[in-house]
Image (cartoon, rainbow, N blue to C red; front, side, top):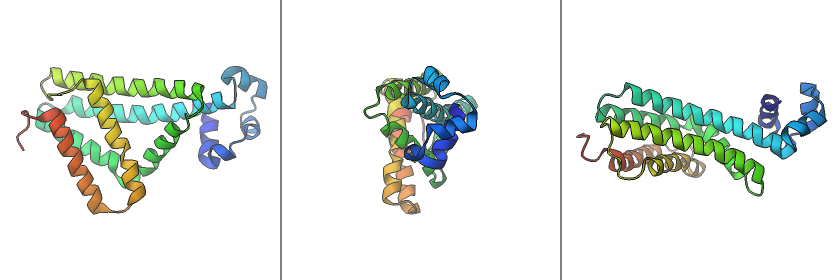
Length: 196
């Protein structure tokens, strides 16, 4: 039911999503849907949380792979710069915009906010744990708590939506943005460790 809801949301948006179409497609009784999810909002919260968690796990998996392959601070720094370039690429704009819309949808919807908050905490914890491991291995030198560093990196990456809405196809500005991110991350994590 959640997967079909996600498919219908992609096709029609939230405004065009109809429970009746979901019932037609799944064959599940409306009463069963309300019993399981409590309301239309509960169903939408489950669907959006699943999409959000999938995006979260993709990010965490990528960072985990980079960390596991890094043997030196320079290798980790290079890997993180490549990850930032991937995340910031224009091809990923739809994903970032979708994430922004999902987050914006929590306003006035406490059940939805609780569900999304749990997914966000999982992501931040996973990234903070990776940073703790990297610091333990001597690959980074975080000046702040690993959790704050994880939140900051997510905020910078998520903020790419603002730049893209302003100037979607400006490759020069993208290069400047990437350079600024690299400098911020270097200062936050690699001061004294990487000589490039």
